[in-house]
Image 1 (tube, one colour):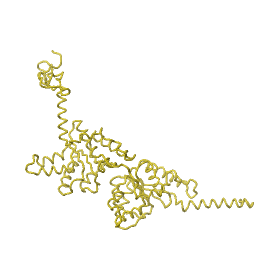
Image 2: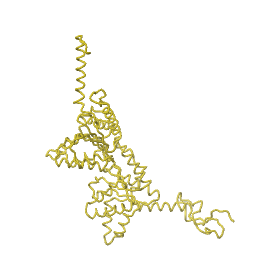
Image 3: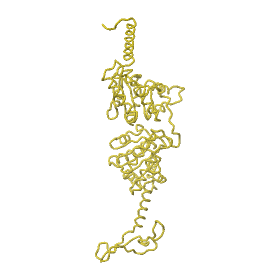
Amino acid sequence: MRRAGTKSTRNTSNTDPRNGDLCPICHGSGYLRRDVPPGHPDFGRAVPCQCKLREIGRRRLQDLRRASNLGLLTRMTFDTFVADGHGLNPQMQDNLRKAYKRALAYAQQPQGWLLLKGSYGCGKTHLAAAVANYQVEQGLPVLFVVVPDLLDHLRAAYAPDSAVSFDRRFDTVRTAPLLILDDLGAQSSTAWAQEKLYQILNYRYNAQLPTVITTNAELEDLDARLRSRLAELEWSALVHILAPDYRGSAVVNQSELSSLGLHAHQTFDTFDLRSRDLALDASQRTNLSRTLAIVKAYAQEPEGWLVLLGDYGCGKTHLVAAVANYRVHNGYPALFVLVPDLLDHLRATFGPNSTVGFERRFAEIRRAPLLILDDLGTHSASAWAQEKLFQLLDHRYNARLPTVVTMTKDANIDPRVATRLFDLSLSQRWEITAPNYRLEARPVQRAKKRTRGTARGRKGLGVSGRK
């Protein structure tokens, strides 16, 4: 029996595509015959050479890229993405790096839906395209499509001279192994457009097909049926990118709404644990120390909601101002505002001399990366005020945006707001049991001073203070 080996069939028209010369293995034929004895299943059978396999792989990759509809976006990869952004503050840098890692993890194992949300130019399209390019490089099929273009292509399929029928084009999109929809929300809001998008996403939702979506729209502004699919937390992951348009300025200024300037002195270092206050018992001192530790931890990494309850003057405003001061001092944005003042600012936008519209002002508050609402429950109880606060907190609840709230135990709160404030899956609720230091701590201190003064007086008069 001959030794197993390879023998080529000559065809000098084929070359090794790596360098343009004849392949040294197959000598240009592209195929090989295994050196096996007669009767062997592979006897006389031609098998592709390594150069042929590489050529087939390149052609398949080219076909995948054409089918993916990436076009010029092939340059948008994870290697070309600047994860630290351009001139971003620390919070935005950290947020962008987390978005990058989340998108990369999804590209490596696409499961469920990934929703990338952010303003124009924040990098969400680059990350979505990077997911597509990663899949193509792995030899896996993917379809990348801009939503307005998708709807145009579907409309064009109705034309009598269309080379592709509507049903075929529609089916290609909704059944793609991995579909990436860029710029959802920029499409026309016609009933037909909403219906087609719902049909696509509903099909993929039911079939559990991996899908990546980018949008700069708020979820509540989308069609309710789409929103119900996108907001499914067990199936859809929302990544909110905070970075502004990289083509513009990344400098974040303190909002004119913020009253933090009035609380600049209220930091964690200046917070008084009242260790010598006779008005506090041991359990109240322990509670105050524990509260300080909880709030400090939240300030370092704000996630979810933090609700502080307690009597007036117990220290809750000082602590939440300390959170805001800590974040701002470390380069992170934070909006600190007294609730009655917030409502006054909103009402003022309706005035004839206002330079800011209501929608812009309201959006600034509800989208703030960290919002601190002081003294909830002391605001006007008008229907308008209740509705605006509910809309504000409902948005932040659904978007999972970090929010801090202070209130008294007997505050008059809309039941709809209360259900969100005290949802333990998102909110951390903590009550400060210490009394009002203005009313109880100071009289005790004055009483101690009077006692010391009386004792000194008695000593000076030679009168013993003992009975």
